[in-house]
Image 1 (cartoon, rainbow, N blue to C red):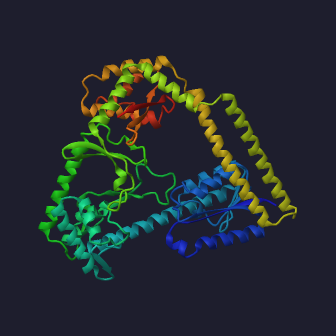
Image 2: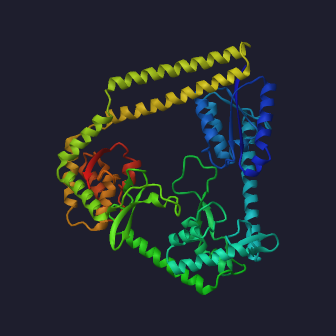
Image 3: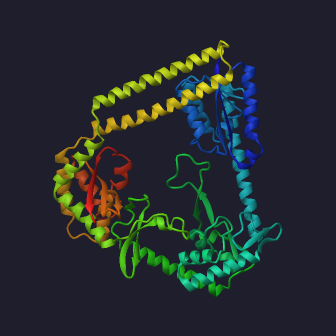
Length: 547
């Protein structure tokens, strides 16, 4: 009896509600039963786009295929595997290399050139049809908008959408919109508006507290003066996104204003009030940007009590850093009791500690050595533990083979089989996680030795750069060396966590240091050192300073 896995996918909430995922799985189960296959695992991606291969269940299937957990994968149709023909071919080829046969329910594809050609043509046609549907939909929406009609979407706060009429003023919400504008003009602060609304017991459309982001959207929305816009933004792939995302284009980018389509809607706010609010928003934004530019450690300070960021704020004309967690549930009660700290005191302490370490390399060498001693274990002990885990992993693989044989011989039922397989998989995941940690320790121990002369060389070159730096240059220099500054307000101390490059090539160090003294357009940037082409060329350090 051949071991089989089944894979099913739906891409929209509508499909999920219509239970198409259940119908796919049921048909695949029936197919496996008719074919005499033993289903060892089912992989399901609910609501995931077929335009991306980064799907949790599909990734797990590909990993398990490399472990020889099954011999056949059954899928309803090629477009359930992927919407793009290139992706289909990539996954099918990968599975075949692992000795796994791919069977489609609605189309049996053999390895003959004719069938492979047919699969490719069908995939390309499916892509073409989908592109045509999307283009027709886009053109239809644009035509509707140009005709002066509202195109879908959730109406802004203050309006209700009525079919064939568009946006209609919601009297209760509209009163709140007018109040928001008046309060902002009176108080001059979005946070103050949120606080006042909470005190008055006025709630947003969703949730229990007003978010400042919601209030900003309301204050900037031109629909309130009688003009809504369609085609303002377009979907784009975010610059940095999570490993798994159900959709690809989850980020929104603003189009050129000339592409916006104006649609007349009932006004709620008079134009003079709206323009005054816009001017106040622009002024406050300029003040916030100007304020952040005067904080040396902007974005680096972390609260030692709750882990939130410290941000720079002025109080009675003096600069301070404050834990941002006091705003997290704003305008409700703050969660963190960490005290604020004078910006001058904290910045001087951190800058002096870093410059002293650069001027006296022995400080860095001793701190780096101490840090390695904390996390370093004897290499032999690590290797023994790794060997033990590898043996445990092999034993689990053998147990999985035996339990499948028992099921095939009729000694145990299917329920018992699946229960045991799941148990073994969980143990395998735990072992894999531990093996990964061990590999990291071994890499750190073997590949990142403390080389005193490298540290001394870096510090000697850095000294030359520390003379007469501007505030902006100091900020760039600290961002090169510091990962974060953990401030413990109740203990009156800070831990500086950072890293320095271990490069024997003087020219490369010069390139590294250039990135803070001028533009970041050089061949070597901070991002390349941290995450890119030189991941092992820097060494961590920690410094403790009293505040």
